[in-house]
Image (cartoon, rainbow, N blue to C red; front, side, top):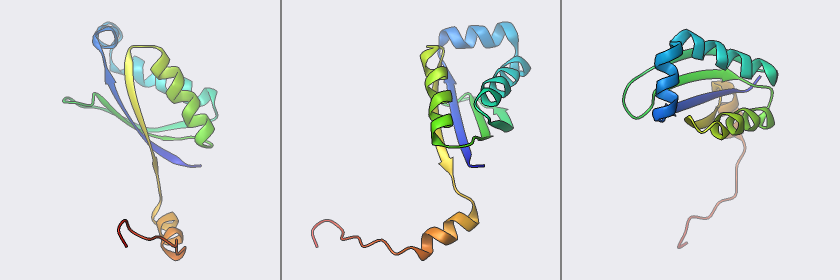
Amino acid sequence: MPKYLVQSSYNAEGAKGLLKEGGTARRSAAEKVLKSVGGKLESFYFAFGETDAFLIVEMPDNVAAASVSLAVAASGAVRIRTTPLLSCEEMDAAVKKHADYRKPGQ
């Protein structure tokens, strides 16, 4: 199953909810939303700075990832960024494909 890095940042409303419920409740909420689209939570870490939480998740496909992203963003409490992750083997396969590219100006 494809893996994704999910970075989330809470706005004031989201931070208040985190203060009220705690971190394990947010992890449980993440597990629930991922399970609802056939996904799975691999890891969940809180941080401080620009990004409040980092998650590594597995989802069946980009459609499932987009569905979760939209649902979370629509809540208005969290800003979310989802990045597809490639395995080393997938990168090996990408290296073997030779895209015909011309850089600008040449």
